[in-house]
Structures are given as structure tokens and as C-alpha cells.
Image 1 (cartoon, rainbow, N blue to C red):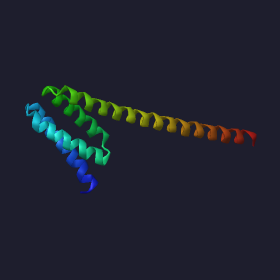
Image 2: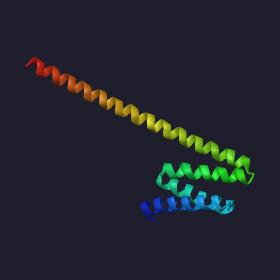
Image 3: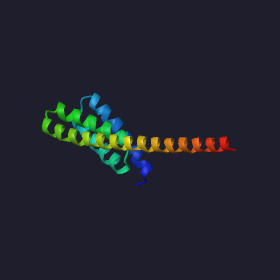
Image 4: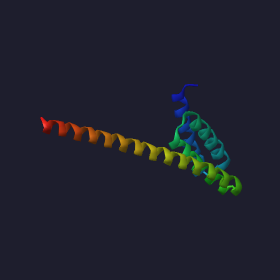
Length: 115
């Protein structure tokens, strides 16, 4: 199955899961959230993955399965932590590039002044 199709299917399953949740069909919602999580993991779609985990956790809690909801919550939290680390690294990389560019511009300006 092509990656684009999996991304679309993950989003569609998430949408259908949200609808099942709103209509209080928690068993169907759980099933659809699980499918969305599986596809989002395969395609590294973090936005859908986090939303699907949130819905999944809520459904588990509403059905009284607090232990599993807690365990899934820990997985989601570690995912958020990984994403935060990645965003911090990107910010640091961008800052480093900006500083290098500023230094190069400063050196060019100094060269111009020397001439």
C-alpha cells in the first residue's frame, strides 16, 4: 500500500473514530483509533498519532479500563518528549546556521571596509 494512501487512511480512520466517540460507540472508536495509530506509526505522521492516542485514551477511560489508559498515556508522553527533543534540535541547528551566516556577513562587511 503506497505511503500517501496510508496517510489518508490514517486520517480517515481518525475522523471516523472521532465520530464514533461522539456517538458514544466506544468499542468502534477504540478499533478505529487503533487502526489510525498503526497507520500513523508506519508513516511517521505525528499529528494524527497524537490525536489518535488522545481519543484512544479517552475511550479506554470511559469504558473503565484505567490501567490500559494509563499505560497508553505513558507511550503518548514519550512520543511528545521525543518530538520536543527533535524540535529543540531543529531550533538549535537553525540558530547555529543563523549565527554562521551572521558571522560570514560580518566578515564580508569587514573585508569591504578594509578595501
